[in-house]
Image (cartoon, rainbow, N blue to C red; front, side):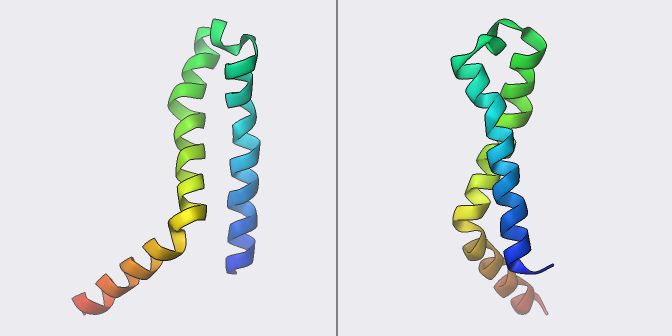
Length: 72
């Protein structure tokens, strides 16, 4: 997979999964316990990880590549 395609997929995943978080903050989602738990335990961690990956993924990929080279 090309890096540009990976970035587009992760970016859209980040944007789309942020919508329920906005509903939790500004809407009535917080009063619905199953939806609130889904936002807390699924959507928020995925959005945080995808944001971190977009920010520091290149650095992490480079560090993991060096470890594999050192191990062989």
